[in-house]
Length: 197
Image (tube, rainbow, N blue to C red; front, side):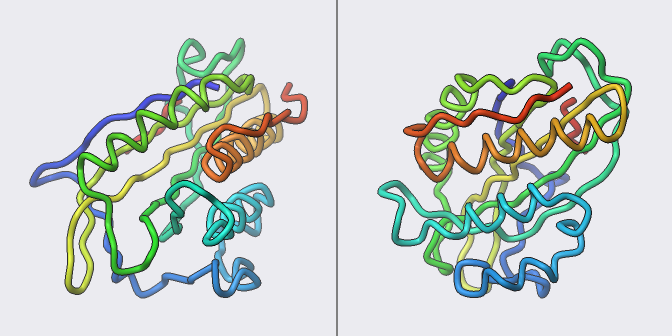
């Protein structure tokens, strides 16, 4: 799967707000994933959120938590950047990530090490017609600040159904790679751009 990362900080850059009132701690209450509106139209998003938040004690690496997500159609697609032949339509999502425990954030250096390690692992998994971009951003909380990571994922295809399938495969690859550190092989189901705002 195509993957890349960058740092996006500055006066006009988006900030990850850990005090967002809609936050649901899916590690403690995974059943509440149904309350996240975006998961109703894309089951793999629900599955990815559960997997990403369910690693508190199981993952030997740094456990993370998801904070916020969104899902939208996009036409801002480049087939060359998505290992795709046809990008007629696309669907994109983002997931904000912070480390656990709740009161900790990434430092810039630890966030950079995390994405530098993760991107090559994601690139090693075949997953055509999709892409993930990991953006390191400033994060703020009630009593602390530091860095978080926004994962932008996009899938494309000749139809909206194909695009949903491609994004679903990308979400499975991403969540599995994060939670296993690349030790498991993800075989996406057969699938028939970068959408950073």
